[in-house]
Length: 474
Image: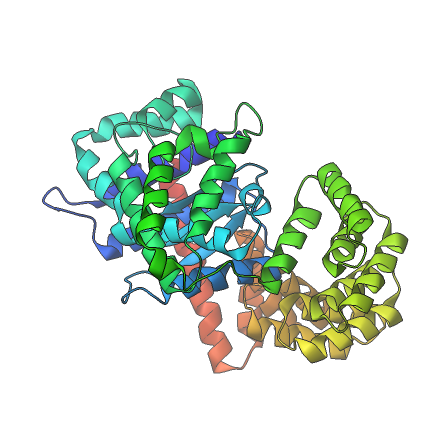
């Protein structure tokens, strides 16, 4: 499905659900209604978009976002930050505090301040509840019209372009219309508050200005079907003028902050390019980096990652070893060295590298995941179970770990645990038939009261989700 159609679907559903759920006398969407909207929209986003699920990148972006959130007064929502795997400049926020940034936009950044600038702007839109206000104001559009739009999208009647003319999805995303489009005033307000939040969090206010200038100058559109920031985001020129004026007027305040040199940014940024970016572009970039900056460990790290991605694990390992010599005991480089050893079937070397990494980052999800898989490869299933159980206790949403944990427990004839973990795995994958099978089996075998209650809760959640799916299909 084309990118624009995905986004139209999301916000058509936002509007459609909002109109169904709001009483006629309501003056605005309540926080509870907005949270319910957020939950429904998130399901649609997950269905139609591929996410970057790299724990290092996701945790880093969330850390920067939460640094900014910490400067705000108490918020009614729990903010979460996601990276969508789309090679184009874009970002957007939905009601209820979910904020999305495209991998292409993250790749274009040069420092943490630019990331903070974009996130601060989106956070401000959520704080102001711009989309939620416009949903309420747009009640003048009848339910029948909205139902027609939704049907047109799902059934193809009228095509995506017709739907796009009727429903806008707001900040930095596809579609513009009178109903939900952000105004110039909305954008300036989001910039004003975003600048306030980011500078208070210790970031340079120049980050957002740098990104807007970069986006405007490059005008990277991707394909003709994929809208860019410039085609969907109003008042870019006005915003640049406003931010430049703001910086001039706040010299004293901004002089106390500076461009943040963040090793965490360098690691996350290198990974987003080498693992998730365009393969040929990444190869050219890191080949040039190694040639021009041979003493830079990040150049060798990025080159090693992209070489591994192309299947050249021998040279990848060589470059990661070079990176380690120049950045001794960097746990992320050690982790990736161990991961590539594992993928190459070199289990003893993988075990050594991953053990070294885990001694430095004991709660890192990805390191634990590959350590567990390496222990399976070395014929140590009991140790693998302990490793995966530790991983799940730290990160319950690490779905692949649940699968391997269930499989190992099955082979060890620990059938209560096998069904329990496989049930969780299939529930997370929304494969509800398989999930119900394993959870019912687990319910018969497990004696632990806490796990029994958890299984019953999961089965109830499955029933509710399936009922909702049936309602939406009519």
